[in-house]
Length: 115
Image 1 (cartoon, one colour):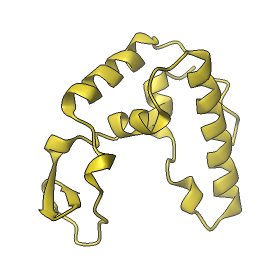
Image 2 (cartoon, rainbow, N blue to C red; image 1 turned 90 degrees about the vertical axis):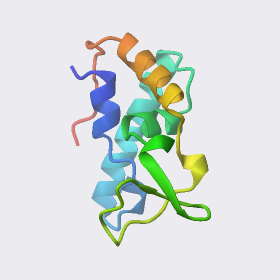
Image 3 (tube, helix red, strand yellow; image 1 turned 180 degrees about the vertical axis):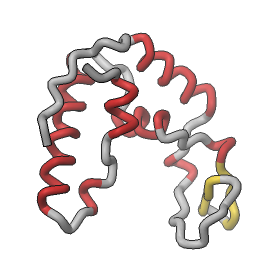
């Protein structure tokens, strides 16, 4: 069994960019599992907002270095792509989403496919 937070945090959200079909298939299976699980929990949030919450994509942790280009603060690596403001949550929204995730309990049965 894995808590919902752990499943979301451990998911490879960028599997679709892989050139390795095995990585893509594994990511797709896990993504489908999460979609079904969230549906069974009547999740009130889009999956994208769940990702942003667990990955701490929060406005006050980023700085707009050039117009429309937000970077995690401090910006320590030069080869990091910026994000758009629309890809960031307000702290209050993150707290609310994380509270919902925690309320689902630590004992969500994980029938995550073995990949």
